[in-house]
Length: 372
Image 1 (cartoon, one colour):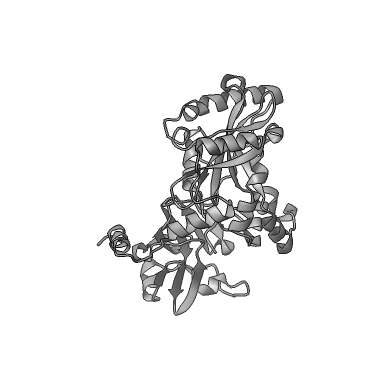
Image 2 (tube, rainbow, N blue to C red):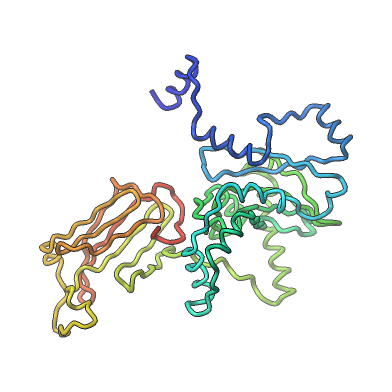
């Protein structure tokens, strides 16, 4: 039987079974203080009106593709409706509860990209964890409010330090941004929410509905690219310069990222990673205090094979053994299909022989780095 058939079989016979997806949905509902069912009957609407409240709809996009997107609502006092984008505060408890631990080494990697090795800011793990516990919400504008859309924008709401918490990439969110004209698609980490905001005459939240607004044929999505171009053109005219593009991701676009002083390099696509490890230079040539002369020749493929080269694939680890010694022990950022790992040898007159390792990712997403 398939997993679905087995689940149906057990439940038809009175066996209580809760799937991982169902547990995840229950966890999300508890965090958002959401009832099991949202009843939108006339009595409920009348009660909200009597309490001088307004319900605003928005949509939750889980990282796990097996969990469907859901429409949620939050209640706003009528006096507070025009007090700005209220989702920025409303979603803080969710992002705080989902994960609290921050990876300091990932922050250092990102800071080095932005500031260089000398200008990177120093932030303690304690300070980062405090930020994570508070729940920081960042909004990413999918559609900018402009006159042609009656100053109505669409935002994605995400955990500001989602990548630093090592949350998985949200592929559905990136796909929506790609449809909205962002190419390459931005990288989002962790669960996302999407909502609508009006900015004229005052800033306030507006309804964003599941189905009508999340369909690939949604009207706002069809107009998004042109409206964003219109906004960007106007901003360029005002400021006299273009916005900076999103920083490139390590290993993408065929640009190799060197690691461990050039011991190996790597590239990636959404589907796989490729690691090139130098093994063809005699070990004596790599020692700083070695007396070997430049007359030593790089090892040939035949010599490397004779040295007993071995490559081992695990779900989160790659090891390379050469001449009975461990040349590489790399704990991976995310999981690979260990059964599909392959390697070949390549020879270069200057660099010697390298082993080219190819691995398929379990999840087809970009990694912010290759190691754990």
